[in-house]
Length: 458
Image (cartoon, rainbow, N blue to C red):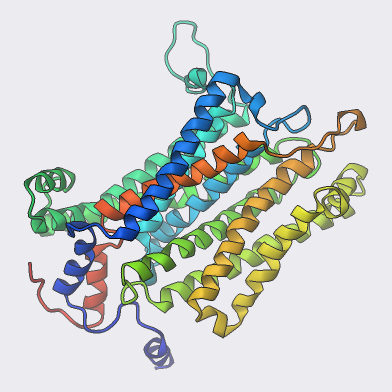
């Protein structure tokens, strides 16, 4: 009885009044509407210009080499590894929402899983650029793959670069399959509702002959659950492999066993912050407040708060380990982070990742859409600063003072980073225009769960 009363007092996952037909009409109209909204053109135009900045930066890099970046002798990676880890982290929320919450039967994932999965694919696309271009000779990147060759040469599997290639490619493949399988019933809905011949053909091919029969649903649910089970370990394994890029080295500040769980928690933290960053404007401009309700936003805020506390614990463990180890190099590394030349970056990340998210304990903040958006933006910035601190402050003061040097990104570092954001947003805008951003058939299950079983009006 207490559980039933608690469920009644919770905010709904879908606002009352929706039927099968109204759900299909509203979500499919976002794609089938012939008149593209003005804000879409503005957003896409800005994103496309930023993506062109990325293409310009990569083209200039191919002609000049990585000397155009700010890398030097002690800091050999710089923005490349920072942005790789940041983008991979952002992609983790999509897999968590889609796979793990599906297996745990959490219905609140329904309204946000589709664009969270798309966010995963686009974030991985942006992340995959950086390991390839930082090598200096990207036209030879196929050497990283164990392809058949006459000399029987194999990649160096002890290289973290090879680990990244396998982790990212595996993650992208499984995420793409999981995303596409979930789209098949919705492609069939668009096929049946669109009026143009070209769209009917395209959506018909993508729907793979879906007719909604019992056999189709049985096979679909089996495949979807299998892919969810396959994708779930990737949430843990992929960012664990990325953390090994650091943890396997002997550099003070990197060689730590806390890194795998610490990186996984940080990835989910950053991912949910980005989902909030995208979901809040999306529900506003498309009028989806009845599908993406405050309950969804509050649940994401709670996950973000929980993972943020784990990240804060990771910071404290790093400091404690440096002190308890009684190793002068580890002690100097932490002291240098807090009081050295990059102290402003370190304390900024503490403010963004630890201090500001504590406002989520306050009920009024959890119920404030603007407040949640601001906190999510702080976390987005803070997680990038965290990767900056991990990479730069651990490298710029080497074991030998003669190797010490400062690092800062050049114009081309920033152009590549900002351009990757443009690539991400460009793909996101295209996705919003041609594919349903909310799962139609899964939203209908909420209508059934509410007790409203009116027939779908096609």
